[in-house]
Amino acid sequence: MEKFGVSRNVIRQAIGDLVDGGYLIRKKAKGTFVSTPTANVERLSTQEAFRETVIRKGDIPVTKVLSMEVLDADEQTAELLNVDVGTRLIRIHRLRYASDVPVSVSSSYLPYAKCSFVLEHRFVSDGLHRVLSQHYETRIYRSTQRFEARRAFDDEAALLGIDSGSVVQCVTRKGYNRMGSVIEATISVYRGDFELEIETIEQT
Image (cartoon, rainbow, N blue to C red; front, side, top):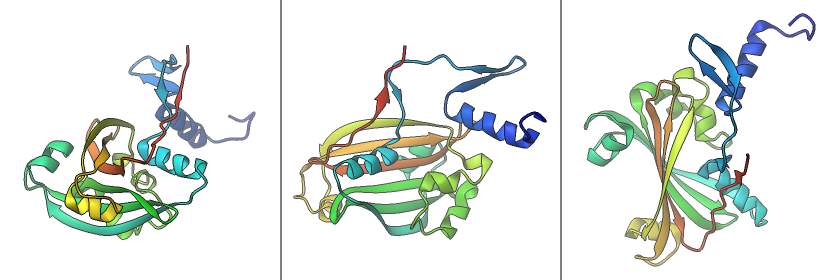
């Protein structure tokens, strides 16, 4: 540490970032080790992939927050977040554009008890995951994503400027903290004619 002029805290933070990125793994009572690369490692979340896809096509990614509210979990949202029905949740409803064309509408659900601080943000420049990363307990450590094709509901079709019943791409993402608790569940619906590109890196 003295040789490179950095503090112990800086080194801990750097190691933590490498663990979060999947480059190192920690084993209890053994130490920290370089992780073994695996094939088809997904490098982008759908949120990041949306931005990269739009920019690659020469458009400007824009996000509009339609609403932020506190509500009680119903059966569907309770199952998504692994909480009891009636638990207080935060719902963030957003519409994403490629320049001036609406291409995605999403609803993010978060447990109010852990994430009430997000209500102080308007998400004009900061993304949801960046805001959540400000607190250790709510920092997203890993995510799962499920993709499906279905018909658009009337309210989704109206926001996306498509016919009701049109085929859309639905992505359900769940983000977990280091303790394995679900911190964020987002349901994103994309127009059927929007090609979402997920970057993967082949490693051997």
